[in-house]
Image 1 (cartoon, rainbow, N blue to C red):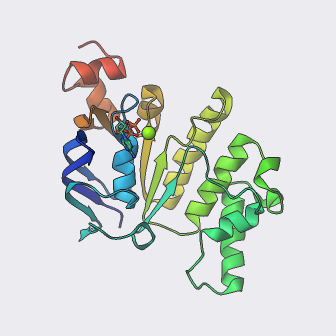
Image 2 (cartoon, rainbow, N blue to C red):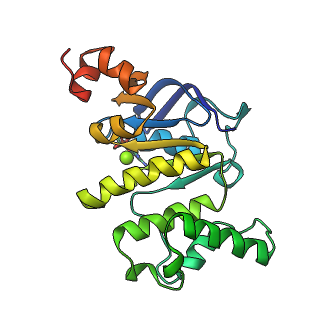
Image 3 (cartoon, rainbow, N blue to C red):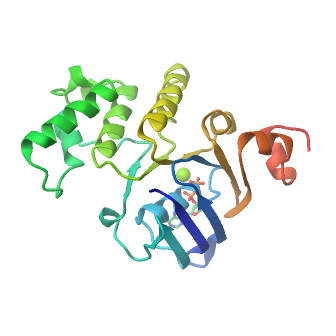
Length: 238
Ligand code: ADP
Ligand code: MG
């Protein structure tokens, strides 16, 4: 189960409040997209869910359990970044295997799992290669695979396609939607691209300046934008 609840979450960097009393429920199994202009607090929100940053106040629940202060490795969450964060000297296989470190899975089981996931993301023929030999799309697949071997209830993806060219980005959008269907886990996906948000999410959360403007399905948003910002952001008449 991968339901996430943020209750009264605020985040200060020095004196600046970048997240302001945020309340949000992310449904188990949903493909939830956080969208908003650069600097509105999307990455900070993700990092707090993943445990990479602590909130200044408020509570975060994953699967009904309060996770305040729980370190990233102890949350049932895996994160995929825009810049892939792969280990350049390790093969694709070892990069993926790295996701399993400390999990004490027997070698044979581990290899089966890695092979299965490589197959799903289309990397079976690249397992011995180093990241530098791969295209941007392939690198992003390695990052996905490394997150997937952990079998988390929640995947957190921070602008994972923004370094890819337009054609590949379109292809990867479709692949990610299919992957979400196949896994059935919760995806929390950040983008600043409203077209991407509307085409991928089943729940869209529009943020601006650390405040949620509206959280709704794409159809609801389209027909009933809550305010001028939401309307302008998704490009419908106010
Ligand atoms: P987004 O991902 O929507 O572009 P961020 O969550 O990265 O936005 O940033 C939100 C705000 O917090 C921005 O004003 C940014 O400058 C600020 N910020 C983010 N991380 C830090 C940090 N580590 N120290 C100080 N300010 C930060
Ligand atoms: Mg960001």
